[in-house]
Length: 66
Ligand SMILES: [Zn+2]
Image (tube, rainbow, N blue to C red; front, side, top):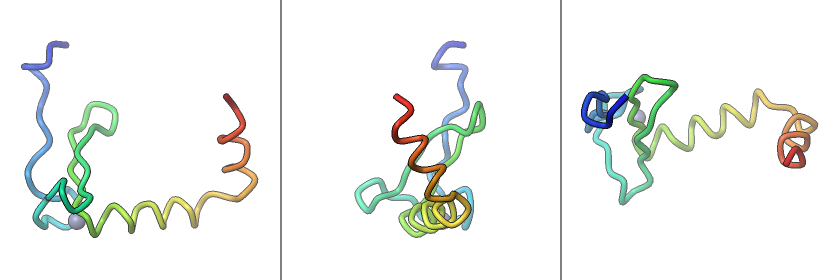
């Protein structure tokens, strides 16, 4: 798939629809092939959620896998 045919992430947050700014910690990327944009408020919220649903043991295993 060429870069031109790829759908680019939007300029607003995919979760809350808020303004996106890379300078303040916003992130753009892809969930598989789906373009996503996260604002500086939703990024830490997602990290917090992942930490809550991931056990310490699982984090340890992931960190020491490679
Ligand atoms: Zn957001």
